[in-house]
Image (cartoon, rainbow, N blue to C red; front, side, top):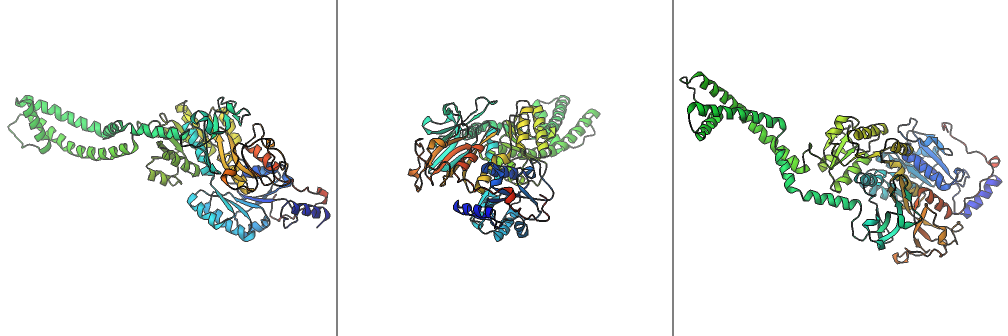
Length: 604
């Protein structure tokens, strides 16, 4: 080992770092994925470490790019390895032995589990972060890989889409040190329950996150005391409204007893019978009651032919018998059709033609399925659209009794079939940015006041679209979920993420290590204007709930081992992680470093 690297090794051991097999003391992280989530996780790693030369990041991507959005291969300072199969050979080739962590970000749950087994065969002490959709499967995976974090980006992002669709703040709840905290509007909670101010949303064009003057924040983090707020209140109002309308629902079911065409046919036949009955009563010179009797008997059972009658009477009798033949199957069809329609109307609460106040969800993939299920749990009527009859959420929609329209949401007729004119919101969350944008614009052309919640993979593109087309709410799932994946990869306690408008706040508990910039500093050094807000301080060695200080004195000195619970923006959390970690060992000059050998098939 050369003299510069030997000096780095001594400092690395002193700071608690593990020396890698190639003599490089920098922490090494491997990311397997190529979509927007992988991009934001890699960016988060580099932003946290502030400089690319203090951390090594290797990204494993397939030979052929298969996703839209930002390309993780475009990030400078990372090593890119192409491999279509994540097996032991691939992990050995990328230098996984001695790595700090591995993030498996494919959308294939089973493939991620298999890759996790292969990775542990190469590096048993590895920190694993797996992306999973099936949460029931995720619980078992945590038992298979004890040193792992199993996260679902769809589960994290779905509440933000639900809240945006209902026009409420994000329904974020989490428990920390014996207290249940939630996000709410200031007007929905008692002043004594407020923990800190989160955002001032009074001006949509100038949203202020973590304002210095907390009294100006209209969205706050508060302790849950049993009083419903935000989306929960809206959901309960919707449920109560539906319960108050049983008579109206029943009347709609009666009105839907038969289809329009069947009703018209029945009315025409009945009109012919009534006219002929009137003519018979005039010809026979009988009373109206006798005329009704003769007409019904002739219609339903026929009559004996009578050649003594004049031609006009014979013609009326023949026509009346033909009408009777048509009436009986019509009555049967009306009864059968009516029973089916009445059941559907009673189940859905209203006719499809008269549906209003519902939410239309386009795309039943990972995110769309979560959004649809959460809206249904809140008691909100949902209509789903997907052009793939085998999409992930179709079977769940059928079990929940949610109508599914098979078709392309970019077509006007498909949107109109979902009663887009009378819905309260359109949530477009398919995996195709172009189709999502086209569906949103077509819906806005039908009704300009419609609330549109749009999913786009590229967050920069989402921001530009929001301003250019006046689509007020556009979300990037990867942008919302990436902080939790990055925190798990760094073994940091990211407790919750809070999406607000087009911003994301992170709730995290950060330990202070010896020799860091904040070791021995007062608590006043923790906060940053508009960046970091301290909400709790746990002294070193304290594990009881009563030891947590929720109103810390700013003059208190921070000691190594203390834990700081903060609400911060992503850049603010990166700053705080650097301030609470020891300075990384200095690297030797490039002239003294022997380059790491690169595999022959490594294109980077």
